[in-house]
Length: 411
Image 1 (tube, rainbow, N blue to C red):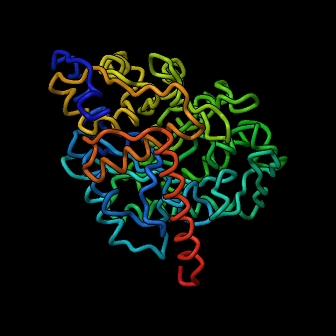
Image 2 (image 1 turned 135 degrees about the vertical axis):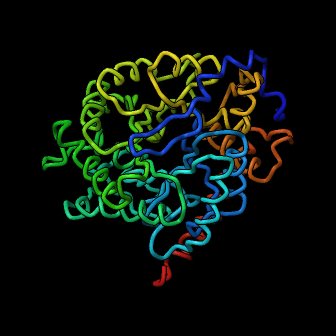
């Protein structure tokens, strides 16, 4: 499919008016509209944890396309906790000028670019890391060691240090990633968290680390810098985080210095079905957002399953959420906010994959992001099989680069 084939119809321009009203966050930052590019693992780092020119161009295109906010997925403070060797690593050894260029590219046209602070925990990439989670696991496709109490207590400062460096580099805010099965999400989930100390057991204990991270990050960046949290409505796994417990976390976060709560769901647990691969016709977690709205006054963002202008407009117009997060939709049409504002592309036509190999759809969309960053998105798309092969080959090459680079004592 080519770029022009992803848009199906038009709508009156004023149908999008509610989406183009400014949003003032509790910290005082004003977002120019209600459309965000949700975090995706774009896997466009250079293999040494640094941004690339292609990555800068990708976020520049989203800024030019009219988003109020872009979130860049999975930025780690340490190289041994990354989800992929194309992720970014921001710490004292990083080349800050390269991060400053990325911040500048993504902050054009009145848009904000925020870092999603990540730690893959049990799902850290084994070729480059030693996976560690709340508890030891030994499953057919997932094994990890348990974090020690000392390692857990060091985590808030690690997140805070990366947040401070992001602020210094010119990024507009940070999002603490506590969803999709990454480390802070693992602590919230009784499926991953079997600890018997102060960080395990009741939901009050399982949310303890998340709250400690939020407080440390806030102290590091000050009161006027946006701090968001991404939270699962549910892990969509038997024995995982339930909606009841997730709502308890929402109530707890209402008392914390948080500027935006991004609601999503699902996990990248090996073999689990991704929420983004669902065939539902509407936003996946809207009902949960309605329940969350009753428990918090924090601005809410809804991510997952929003595929039409009407769905985005209605979610904001009914007052359930303040911001809509789009990921794959903006991979198909990076100027979607601009087009919605002008009454175009009211419905996106998403590609259909009848027999997708595991990881194939993710690979297709990831390579679509590469093509956007190379300004080659008008070309015909590759097959799932070709995309998966190219994606895996790129990971192998970057793994070699990663291990060579981070083996150096100076890094």
